[in-house]
Length: 179
Image (cartoon, rainbow, N blue to C red; front, side, top):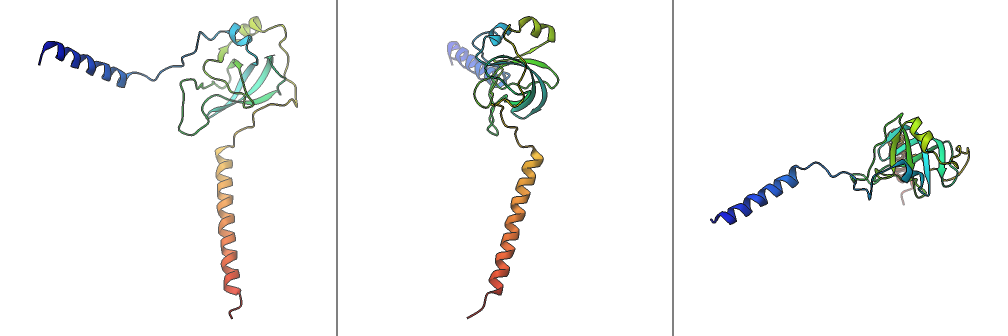
């Protein structure tokens, strides 16, 4: 085997090993996520995270920086909602932290490229003059996801109803007159 061939094989092995051992890719945003950029989004909210449940987070809206009025509490989608699917743009928000989120769509989607953790002082300094308080009863909040306990209850209730209906059908079949 020639030395150039050996070099190519070694290079190929190193590249394959490097790709296999590399950490997962991080979000590839078009540019750096900044407060100025988020404040200029069509819809931006200053929120405090109350709960993170899978690809959704329940947040209290501190201020609406741009876009339509929002209620004091909404659910935002922070990642892929299909089971077993993830993306480098998924973002896990930390409960108790303050964030500026640029959101879009009826589901109020955000991502690693449109979410930025901030301090109260940073938020005050960056808040646009048109920032306003949330409006109770306003529309457009994403519906909360079902809790695992609710899903289990619905599944168990459905199974119990099916068994009960089956038992009734068997009894009716046995009681029918024989001709």
